[in-house]
Amino acid sequence: MNVDIGHPTATHPDPNQPTTPTRHFTIRLSATSRGARLARHLTAEQLHRWGWPYGTEANDTSALLVAELATNAVLHGRVRGRDFRLRLTLYPADPALRIEVTDARPDRRPPTPGTLPPPPPDLDSGRGLVLVEALSTHWGTTCGDPYTKTVWCEVVLA
Picture 1 (tube, rainbow, N blue to C red):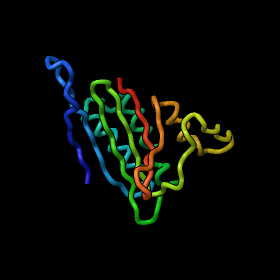
Picture 2: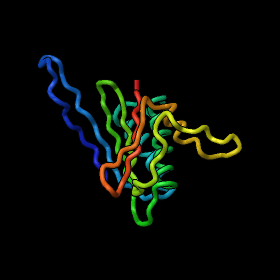
Picture 3: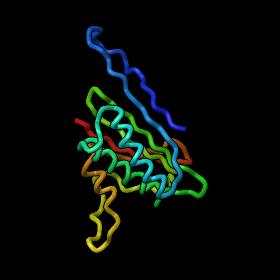
Picture 4: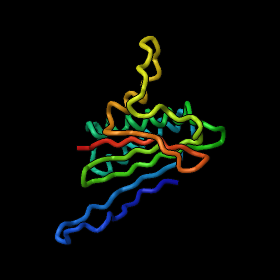
């Protein structure tokens, strides 16, 4: 169901310099509020295991970004009977984390980065992607096949 594996990066041009492996974590979760909550908890746990403990700014920010993207997948990308996928990719040399949430609604794409309208001040919702844009170094959307879309963001963990 989930995978936590290390993959060696490309060979470093200087053989005297060690290469740092990229780390991955992937899991499919139910497209429910419970699945979104679990995505946030699993992200915090995985970052803790990778060396960014609970309560650190890097861990808290990453968990918040996952919570926002997973909630959007549940609210706007849900198709009955289909899950969403969370994928975390750690680049320890930077250090940076790429967060990807894939859902089953490629027809419902969010606005492009830099074009988000400000949320209405009288509503309690509509701020998720505004937070993603503010807290991540960059974000976007990709559609790798006709059945899914992936909303991703990257955050520096230093």
